[in-house]
Length: 148
Image 1 (spheres, rainbow, N blue to C red):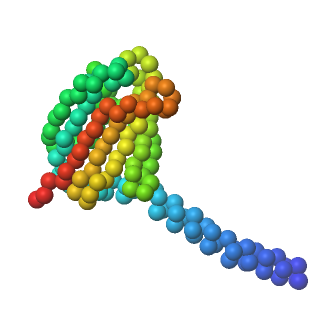
Image 2: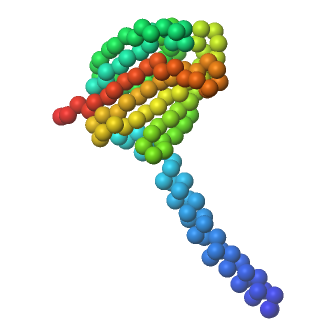
């Protein structure tokens, strides 16, 4: 009987000790599940976009556009949607990476989101063809919320 009581007390003590740790892990996971990371962008936005026409060639020729749009990326040559970028928001900065083909070779792509104010944010894309040692910014968009 004493053996069963001791086992019961040990199991109960472990459950009480471990519960707060499990709760903290669950709260951290729930707090960082990313579900609301893009909530700041709900609404109608006007964008001013600058794009480097020939990235990773030494070119400095940019094209500028304005408009309202939804955010989807497709290859301009064949219309194929890009693969998802993987990353996270940390301290208000979103940083996402993927690997894509460019001119017959694989390059790294970095996409950065910087909320500037509650009603404006900056999106920036950079390419690297040296494994991430250096980056060339080739796409910059400043979005401004359209007031109703």
